[in-house]
Image (cartoon, rainbow, N blue to C red; front, side):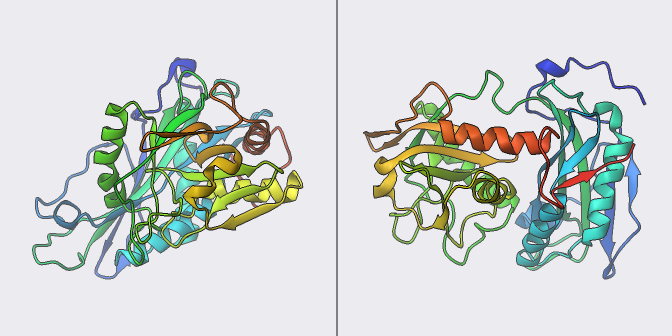
Length: 342
């Protein structure tokens, strides 16, 4: 199958329609066989549970062309596990893990013409999501659900290169103890839109959310986990029951400890510690890692020694190692890479 005539190097990180998407429906207590459709439109009842009470969750991962020409996905099993947790918390049926991974593979095969070539900086972004489709008026779970996966070729998350971010300590709360901060629910992201819009209007790139109970501990941004590097080279990431368990963050901790021989710590990180760190970054599927150059806490600037020009040396080593694994330039730990045979 020939590749589409796309200017791969100038793709933005946005939605581009592809030929196929996967659709499965849950009714009467069971999932149907599912299908691959060429219709990009979703038709649901005006009173569907997703519209009335936001009963929905999603995931995000990528398919890549490796240096040796293979088409691969990075750790889709962890995305399936995380989505299962989201579904259970939102009283939604879990789509079986084996079917989830096979549907991803087949969708990549069917949309192979949209998988960007190696070296273009672009990837095929995959978005599994599920929503309540049956009518709901009273406050209760729906009876019917739809699971979909869409694919879209995307460019780098930061189009003009990875430059250190300026982040503000946010006065809004992202999540509360015993809430939904640890799952990938669409409602969590809707709740962050006001805060990120306000941050951009104030000249900041992102928000640093603190724990809502004490407002003393670092949690995450609206869409990414934090990582820190101490002055003695220890990799630190915040630990909290309200932080989303990022696949990228978990992979970076493994890379740091098992491949780069670093000391790693997953622990509570207090805001008062920020000035003691040598490097800071945010990590997630879209950008892998983006460095943070400065945190502004109500007018007080906390500048990291890594500066506002480039990624710090340790962060850069983590980034190069993980992207090397994803792109096939380095040997991957067992079970991390799922090859899609075309």
